[in-house]
Length: 316
Image 1 (cartoon, rainbow, N blue to C red):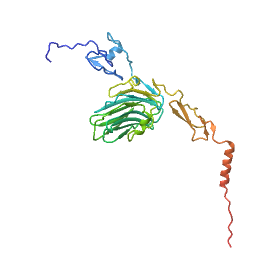
Image 2 (image 1 turned 90 degrees about the vertical axis):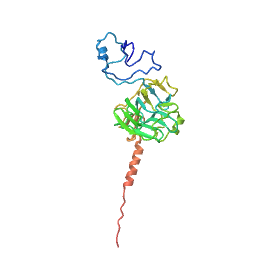
Image 3 (image 1 turned 30 degrees about the vertical axis):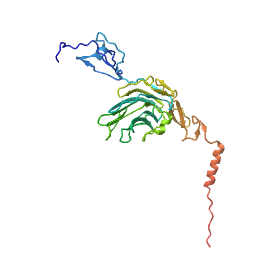
Image 4 (image 1 turned 60 degrees about the vertical axis):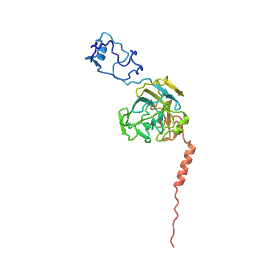
C-alpha cells in the first residue's frame, strides 16, 4: 500500500454490539449466541476479561454455556397473530426461531409473493413442516424429529436456502435437505405473518399447507435473514392476545390429575382428561358413565341373548 500512514491504530475492541456509529449508515443488530477463543493480535480477549488480566473490560454478557432464549413472545390464543415487513429472501435465505407449545398444530410463519411464490412454516401433528413455492409448484419438507414437539419444551428451528437451491430444515439436531430444480428465486410480497392469519385468509392458502388455525405458545430468538425483529414493536399489525415473555401453562399434568386411569392431555391453558378408555366421564374422569340400573339392564340383555334353546328332531 502506498501512502503516508503505515500504522493502523485501535482504541477499542467491541464484541457483540457496535457503539461507534459514525461510519456506517445501517447499524447491525446485536449478536445473540456464544463466543469463545476470540483472539486479536495474539491475545485471547475473552479470557483476559474473565480472569481480570486486562486494564479495562466492560461486560454485559455471561460466561458459560447456556440455552439462550432471546425476546420471547407469547401468543395466548390460536386467533392471535401479528404481521411484519416482507421477508427479503429473493436469492437465499437463513431463518431461525425457537418455539414452545403444547398444541400439536398451528401456523408459525407465512408470506405470499408474486405469482405462486410463497413460504410457510407450520406445526402439523407435532412436527415442523416447511412449505414453499419458487414458481415450480409447491414443495414440503417435513422435520424428522424423534417425537412430537408439542411437549412444552423449547425447540430450535433453522431453515436455509442457498444459491444452488438447496433447501435445509434443521429442527434441534435433526436435519433434512432437499435440492429443488428449476426456478431459484423467491419473490415475496406483502406482510410476513407470524403465529397465524386473519380468519378469512385460511381458505385461500396454497396447496400442501395444512394449518387452518394459529399457533398457541411462545416464539423467541427470531432471525429473518439477519434481521432480528422486535415482534411487538416492529409489528405492522397485531391481533388477539400477545404478550412479552413466555409463561407456560399455570397447571400441568400430574400423576393424580385424572382419576380412574384417565389420560392427562396437556394444554396451553391447563390440561384436560381423556376418559374415552374408561367407564367414567367428567372433567377428571370421576363420573360413572352407567348407573347400577342401566348396568344390570345391560347384563340382563347379554344373558338373554346368550340363551340357546335346542329342539330335538325325531326321525320316522
